[in-house]
Length: 83
Image 1 (cartoon, rainbow, N blue to C red):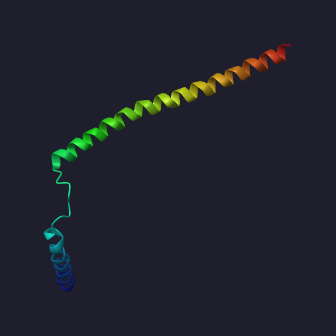
Image 2: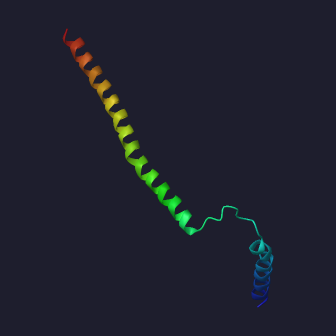
Image 3: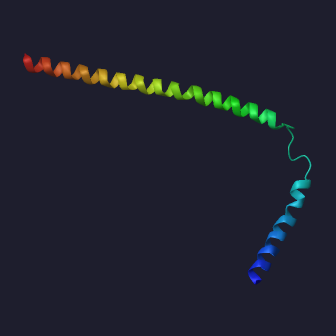
């Protein structure tokens, strides 16, 4: 029973201390509503969606360059062994 009283008292003290935060004026100067934040989130989603294929293409280019060099080395080694 003491733990319930203590927990209730701690919770009450925490909630009583947040009253000043909710009453503060000017904490937000941009006056942006949920619509603005949803629009910005959609823009961020579009940017991330375009970055994924671009990075995949970049890794494909690097992989192609590395494999092309390995093939050139193999061809050079095989011609050196023959002659």
